[in-house]
Length: 371
Image (cartoon, rainbow, N blue to C red):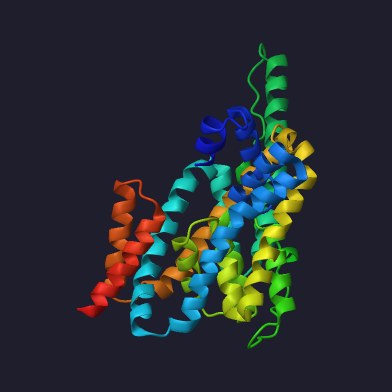
């Protein structure tokens, strides 16, 4: 949609500039779609354009999500609302599963990245912090890829020198398979914080500020951070509430990170929603504004390209792990399985907007409950 509007229709940027900004947005933490919008605003209007583009992209989604959050707190316990949410949740699981499958075709480019993703998935189920998994995986993959490239170049050079001599087997110790070592105990996450019944506004702000500052891999990876921090460590939300928040974030238009507005309202009312939304999106404005002069050159670096590829593979693994856990809560009963299967079939057959799938799941849940 952005490409159609800003490249073809309005011709604000060239196709090459658009691709460069998209690649740059993938190199820094934060939601890719939001940072792309902010980048376009910065290129067109400097700091004023950055602020206007970002606010214009975020505010409508946050406003709609906030309205749903109010309705959820006010009416979420009613049988009708519960029935709709019971249908939305399996549809959301199907949407995320399809997204993981499609992203996997791009993220997992070779067996080395596949192995790194498997290690990240194992680390996630072992309880490691998602932030640690992403950064450790990125560094490990970057070093491994560069070692492999250096080893390959050395082998080619030596084989050229010895082309007329008997072939000598070269060591393959620089390949991915030997460099993908397990995550060590040094990367273990910090001990879980004490369980709190209701967080303060300061705690809500700091949590979402941290997430916005380190979130890699797009909006769906947000699920891993929320599940680890809000459900397992702090116990501010239940898995059921997290599923409800994800469902609303999927149903409403705009960036998936607008889910923070919903959670902030549930945890701290109106001010909780405002502070959570500002906190999770604020780092993206700084990243784009401070790094814009050099971002277009970073993708050309072999080191940064390897780091990004590795982070994407680990992010995909986190998405898969969280989806598995959420599915355990969402897929209970034959109606949930039926809605999930139907949603998968429709998404595989037609290229529909996920919002329609989520809406259809909610209506199906309501109709099946009224039978």
